[in-house]
Structures are given as structure tokens and as C-alpha cells.
Length: 88
Image (tube, rainbow, N blue to C red; front, side, top):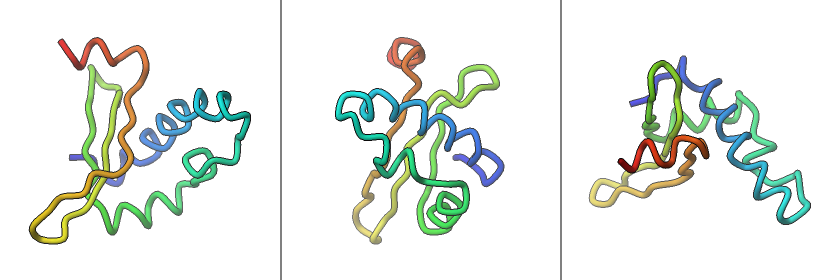
């Protein structure tokens, strides 16, 4: 599980992972790029954050919430160079 101290690294990863989507659509105002640390901290209060770590670096994260019976996964981000590492 990710903790509050991980949020700045998760936010940076989110922005890195969203760059290619922004370039495809030529729109750099998509929500993942506009989210700031304060909004992420507010989301942290409401959601469960998980992280994937390689060495000391966070290379992936997913966040979501439960309604008691079902878990709803939200944003899933994986650092491009880590995709092969996590799948092996």
C-alpha cells in the first residue's frame, strides 16, 4: 500500500504517464496533468492507493475504492520502462 509520503512520487509518475496521451490528442489540459498535490491528498483520504516498487522507485500505482461488496479500480499508471519488469 502507498502511504501519504509516496504521493509526490505518484503524482510525478502520473504526469509522466499522461504525457503521451496529451501528445496524441494535442491536449495538455487533461485531468491527470492538471491534478496538483492538494487534490491528490484529498483523493488519498477517499481512496486506497497501491504502489509497485522496483528497487527504491515507485514504477506503478493504482487507486480505487470499495462500496463494501465491490472494489472499483481507478487510475492505473505504470512507468513505460517498467512494464516488462512487472510482467515477468
